[in-house]
Amino acid sequence: MPRITKRSVDALTDAALIWDDELPGFGARCRDSGAIYYFLKYRVGSRQRWHTIGRHGAPWTPEEARKEALRLLGEVVKGSDPGAARAADRTAATMKELCDLYLTEGVATKKVSTVRNDRSRIERHIKPLLGHRKVREITRGDVERFQRDVAVGRTAADQKTGFRGRSIVTGGRGAARLSMILLSAMFSFAIQRALRSDNPCAGVRRYKPGKSERFLSTTELVSLGDALTAAERAGTNPNAIAAIRVLALTGARAGEILSLRWQEVDFERTCLRLSDSKTGAKVIPLGAAAMQVITAQERRAGTDHVFPGAHGGPLGSIGKIWRQVRGAAGLAEVRLHDLRHSFASNIVNAGGSLPVIGALLGHRSTQTTARYAHLADDPLRAVADRTASRIAAAMKGSQERDGQIVPLRPQRA
Image: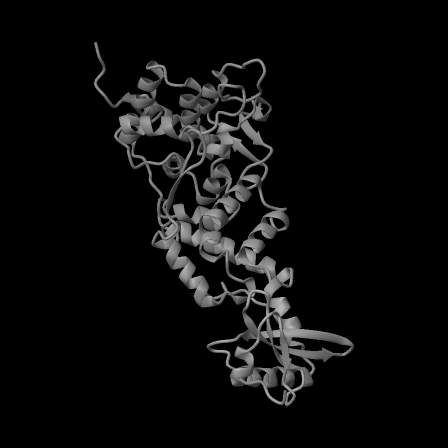
């Protein structure tokens, strides 16, 4: 047959194949399904290739398929292999595959808690929005759209995670900013694995972190102390109440106190010696008030946790109890982490400098401590002691003046 035409192609049946004599290697085939496809047979070196051009019908007419076959042969003459390029495209890594590879090989130096957060952002935001895309196809525009989509709540979800579990994802600018940081790290990892040559996150402006510091006033600390005392008398978990008191009196992070073990408490030097934390091993000086709360904790058999849970392990989340306490104190918008900010503000009131704040709170970077510069050299333990005493006095309904405790409320006869 000198030339493939529409008539000759329409006449194909029963897995038949025809060749075009005017263009060597160009042909059409009817598959078992009855569909007709145009193809090109060519050779690269000693290897023979079959390249499918497309299915007969718009846009692939005999003439359009012949033009594509000519173009492909031109590529072969130049030394490229169209079939290999298509095969590589079919097997190119998707973003979903990159996510899984990153969680397997790219997080070895990260802390367990950080990996847990990374996995959550990947499953809640990155995979739903970008998972089906090829890694090498992602552009800066795609990244900018991703950030906007997370910020406006496109990935928001309310999912059941177990018998009583529930996961609520709201998105927002904070989630978008943190997801962008993770996405950029993943593309840097992709460059190391030769999955692409550049990072499309480079140059994309991220949302700025919100200024969420909240400092409790002396009056608010009085209310908090009253609410904690009332909750304790009502039978609320005493370990949770004690843990909240220690958080207020030390400025420590919640995870550091909730997982605290007795061997990390240095009674002789009145400090906590944490083997691990968000910033690595650290020492937290303890004021007398904080030390008193810890010393009052009962040492339970079968557990070495200072604030054990019901089964002897770490106490776990105290979010529910904290919401009850802060509600009773009229501090519904105050987060547990704001106790850390309040501790920092009281360090300033006790005469501490920014370096002292950074040392007591365990900041790795001076930039982190700089957020307290607008609030305003004593030894660390002395500052911690004065700070904890001031907070403890306020939580008991008193105020310290010139070394004396002055009641803030009228005393009952």
